[in-house]
Image 1 (cartoon, helix red, strand yellow):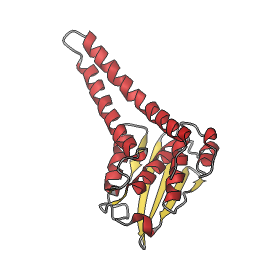
Image 2: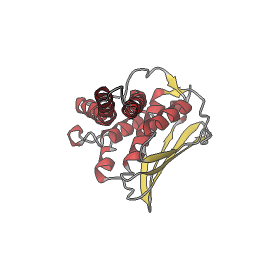
Image 3: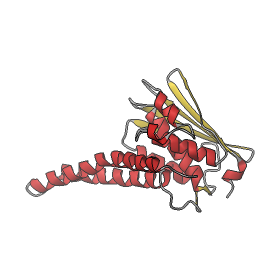
Length: 217
C-alpha cells in the first residue's frame, strides 16, 4: 500500500492538532505552579493529567497512523485499551466490552488493529457534540466482522468524510480532518475489505468484514 506524500503530511498535521491541547495544558499547569509560592497543587495536577492524556494519545496514534511493527501482531484487547485511553476524559464515551463478540486475545496483523482504530476515529468524528461510540466484533466463520455505532445529538457523517473514504480520491482534496477516513479506506482495501456507512436517525453506523486470509496469526 503506497501513501501519497500529502496524505502523510496531513496525518502529521492531524496528530499535532490532537496533541497541541494537552501539551499546552501541561505547559500552562507548570507555569502556574512555578509562579505560585510553594507550588500550586491544582496546577501540578492539571499538568500531570494533561501529560497522561498526551501519552495515551501518542500510544493510540503510534498504532493508528504509524508504520513500525507492520510485520508484528496485536490483539483486539490491546486495540480496545488504546481506544479507551484516547477517549478518556472526552465527550465521547466508548462502549466496547471486553467480550464484544470476537476472540479479543488472539494476535492479529497490525493492519487489522490499525483499521479498527481509524474507524473509531470516524465514529468520534460523527459525534461533534459528544455521545456514545459502540464497537461490536464477531467471528463470522474465519472472517472478522466489526460494527461501529455512533449515537448522540447532531450525529452525522459529513460529505467530505464520505468522499475521503474512496481509495482513488485525489490527495489534494483531503484535509487533516478527513485524512484518517482515507487511510481507513486504504487499509480496508489492502485487507480485501470495504467500509460500509449509513446514518439512521440519531445513529451513524460503520461496518467492515475482514476476510479470513487477513486475520490469521
